[in-house]
Amino acid sequence: MLKNIFLVGFSLLLATASYAHFGMIIPSQDIVEQEGSNVITLRVMFAHPFAGNTLEMEKPVKFGVVVRGKKYSLLESLKPVQVKGYTDRESHKGWITRFRLKRPGDYVFYCVPQPYWEPAEDKFIVHYTKVIVDAFGREEGWDKELGLKTEIIPLTRPYGLYAGNTFQGLVKVNGKIAPFTEVEVEYFNEDGKVKAPREPFVTQVIKSDANGVFTYTIPWAGWWGFAALNEDEKKISYKGEEKPVEIGAVIWVKAYEGGRR
Image (cartoon, rainbow, N blue to C red; front, side):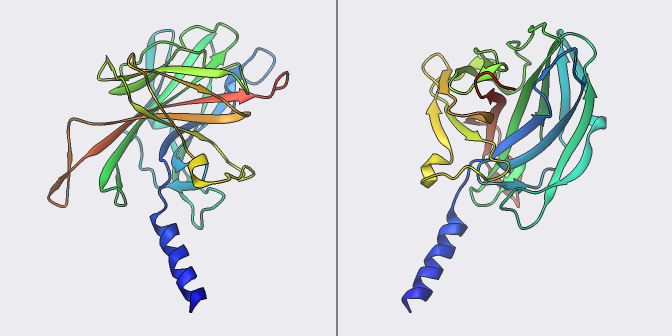
């Protein structure tokens, strides 16, 4: 009897466990140099990055890159691919593309997805996601605002980071500073080797200050996502009811162990 109660309770815990959602753009390289390949692969997906769960992602509304102040659409280059997290029983739709970096500068890749309906939270989710790749040492353009509906503008250069470095970003919504915004932080635990001691360790939670600036010290090497969450002023109709829309400004940065790449 006690065993059955335990199993039921454990099943309810799994059913109600809520993990942070993250839009993701993960490039095969975040720093491209003269002596290496100038072709990178970009994986685009929607997931719970630490917990190892992927989610179905329809083709984005926009996907592109900004370099030297010019914006280029890469939407038609995206190819569908099945992605599977380390805890997934089934794979889900994601996207992939290859891109050749030809000129020196910082390449800011961005994605505007279709709204994702999350029944567990009774709302839609739209994550405006970006990642920066530095090419050939120019190191120019990483701090430029793209004009997305909501956006994290890095105040720390978002590449060439060591584990232990502190990362800062400025949160904006509709071009205006967004003070006291909750920012969720997660490690891309791709192989599942990192184990959280308790559930609150899975998603770190911080807030931007009165000036819209957040600060986080990256504890170990790997890809780290920052999602600044607000609610859109507009709602989306779902089955005849108006539902709220979570808008997230997401940026991904990679940290390295000291002295190694």
